[in-house]
Image (tube, rainbow, N blue to C red; front, side, top):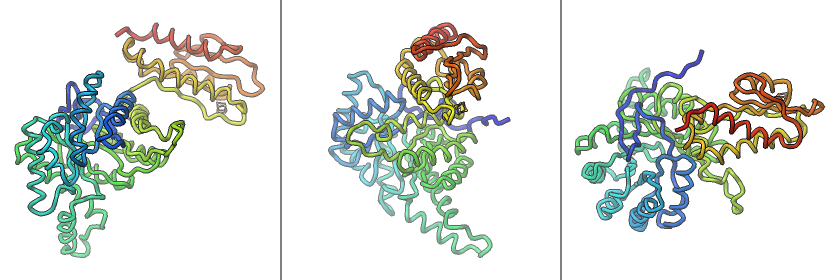
Length: 417
Ligand code: SF4
């Protein structure tokens, strides 16, 4: 029988309030805005949307002085509106300058993401990196050392290429293996350097993102063995919504099932949609996809799950699809209330099935199940509670009655908070 292994043991990194990253804590879902940070109102709106969808932490680009000036204003506005979601600043090239020149920005951010491939070259690299680390140390902030193979430190890559070239033919690594070595070294040497500058080890999270599924699995397996830092998982440049969700789930699913990964993000390219009606254009899709991945592996639970069959020639009408959609929407709508009222309601399992073939069987395995009538079946929908037939619904009020049954089941079975 497949059971998930214990999480890889890591240090615990405190982000803010009661939010931690590490093996002693829930796997945290995070995301990143794609608004111009200096567009304060637009950025605040998106942070709130991502946070409402379930992003525990939200990252923002801080690329210039306007962005750095906007950060404390965004923080204050969110606090005023009751959103305590921690903000992470994403720095490349000039983070040392921005964090030094804008102390209010450095203070308002809960965490800094530093890409060691983008902090300068030679002596400047260590100086710039050290400047950022000392600000983090003095303000008691954690950092993520975010290595990305698209911006891998070229000095380091050359060093590992030369080492490889000097090896006997039989011991030579492939190009990809050299990249893995260099990425691991970039992450771990940066962590060493950060600690030399006085940053405690429990202030460091590591990521090493690549864009192909097998590469991501290889690099994270490698790093997971060689340190105790919590790991942020994510396939970089994962692609457009469908491709990105599938590739990210394949890669992260394998790693998570090996106990590797303490916080995750799906970097999806949202579809363009001027009308706002395309769910694939919604930035918070990446948050919901991460939640779905964690819930499908039974690692974390976010909301009741609905098992619904795909339908087939036995359900040529779309009635059961509409019902599955209606129940999904109902759960999304009610979940914030249920969560505040009932302990463990997110583990509820509901089945909405299209006909008699698998309907009653699947419905019996769920907490609540309904088997709708397929084409040419008698227009009746048996409802099952805890594996036993509870009643049969018929007529044009099936959806309404089924929702009432869900509500009653929840209030009967789940303990009030
Ligand atoms: S449960 Fe019935 S309607 Fe659904 S896929 Fe199976 S045979 Fe088709």
